Image 1 (cartoon, rainbow, N blue to C red):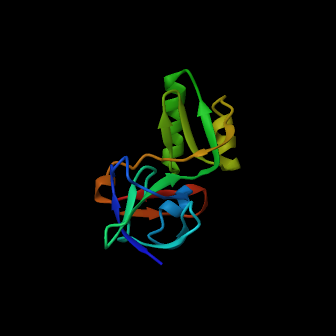
Image 2: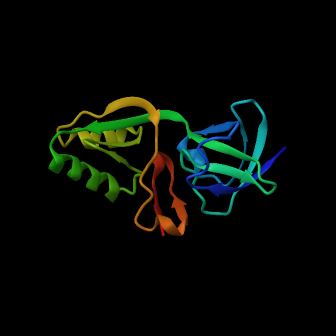
Image 3: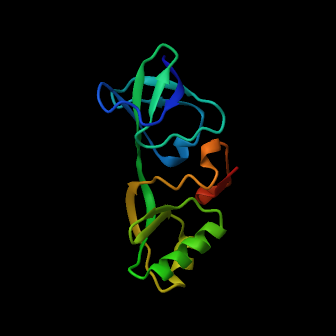
Length: 158
């Protein structure tokens, strides 16, 4: 079983023969077994604190490379045309240390009925979706040191 020990950001676009599809909670784990799309089982043994992103590549010590694909998962997406309302929602979600993905006119978080109820309090209806989840890295993400909390994707970075 191959051990993948390094993340390569902005890896090569071509020449990658296989991929590993992982939901966000698994892309935060540095030690795990996973299955490639081809069915082959691999070991992932990355430096502590590493978070894999969709589009990253994993590399073995002998140079074999596979692509990381963000798995689709249950998320809530909040759409709003009023930037101030969307900013307020993002602020309150962030204040709860919720991982948050931001796009043009929307924010997305891992599905959580308590958070959905909070968003409804702002007069918005979160859309239950199945989508790839790529949250913001955080203000200090270049350091690569991440602590995660309990359920709901809570966490913060140093």
